[in-house]
Amino acid sequence: MKKVLAIILGGGAGTRLYPLTKLRAKPAVPLAGKYRLIDIPVSNCINAEILKIYVLTQFNSASLNRHLTRTYNFTGFHDGFVEVLAAQQTTENPSWFQGTADAVRQYGWLFDEWDVDEYLILSGDHLYRMDYSDFVKRHRETGADITLSVVPIDEKRASSFGLMKINDNGRIVDFAEKPKGEELKQMQVDTSILGLNPEQAKESPYIASMGIYVFNKKALNDLLKNNPEQTDFGKEIIPGAAKDYNLQAYLFKGYWEDIGTIEAFYEANLALNRQPRPRFSFYNEKAPIYTRARNLPPTKVLNSNITESMISEGCMIKDCRIHNSVLGIRSRIETDCVVEDSLLMGADYYESLDDRQSLLDQGKIPIGIGKGSTIRRAIIDKNARIGRNVTIVNKENIEESNREDEGFYIRNGIVVAIKNAIIPDGTVI
Image 1 (tube, rainbow, N blue to C red):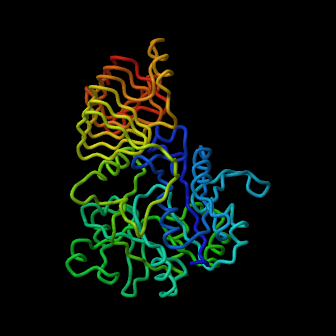
Image 2 (image 1 turned 180 degrees about the vertical axis):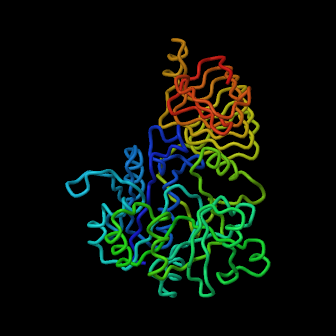
Image 3 (image 1 turned 120 degrees about the vertical axis):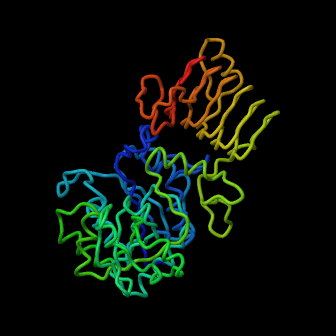
């Protein structure tokens, strides 16, 4: 794997995840209480011993850069690195990144300096655990120019994805973007060719791209150089290469979730609480998900009822009820609160008892969830100040609402309190 260079695409402005992306790049959005989205592909790389990793981004990259710098420092052990490459304007490329392929094209001069055989192109906003070494081995064994990781899809969900068709040798010969009707039926394939048993192949006769690829170095360089007008891998570069290049499919049979929307992000986080077996688990000693070590104290729980929830380090929870929720680092919940079906991202710092009392004496609100508040089906971003006796339950069942001036949005029916929001005492949402 020393001959593989990983390139993680940080994505665009992250509008589908807004307001979580208001002050941070999409890969820097907190996940499962203590992680960031970027920790998933980076950890998968480290576990596969792929240790040369670039992350391309152009929006709100400060917090992402800070997280990566503090978390992944390989200096002194080997020549591995994790480095952010932000979009930049040059005399040759006066424009910002125009798409996934254009982002890689603009930094091609840097990638060329490495003595590698393959580029592993990854997305920064997916939740899954994959051994990339198996992915690369499949690429080499088939003599492919490009290998796409694909997931088997049933007919019900197939029309929501970009689909591919393969021949008997597993070579990709056709593409269709979210086909329907007769066009959808034409995209059926025998997925047993890729490793599914006959029963599984019958249930899932379609294959969809995960948006991650292995390119031979020369193939990628030639495609980017010869097609300067093409800016996107999934929509232009790869479909256009199918005729002249050997494109192969690698079937991934594990859990994979694209969490690029508020609803998908919310559901993926709460799904971690499922029993007896969540679809994705962080409890895997052989393939851990890494993140920044913060040296926080243990969580303190006083006379509380907590069920089916994940509680991160450094939290303080008093006399409250928490059900099916995820609490991020340094979360603070005062007495007589109810938190259900919610994701609390916690805080970046603590306020001392004296500081908290001083704020209360001034009629201001400390960080955390104030006494007597109720929160259901909500996302509370970091450093939010929720006052006393606040009710956040989407009382009027509103599907979409922009109330940024009041400190929150409603997306897909989910209330999202923005980072650093201040919600006054007694507010009902």
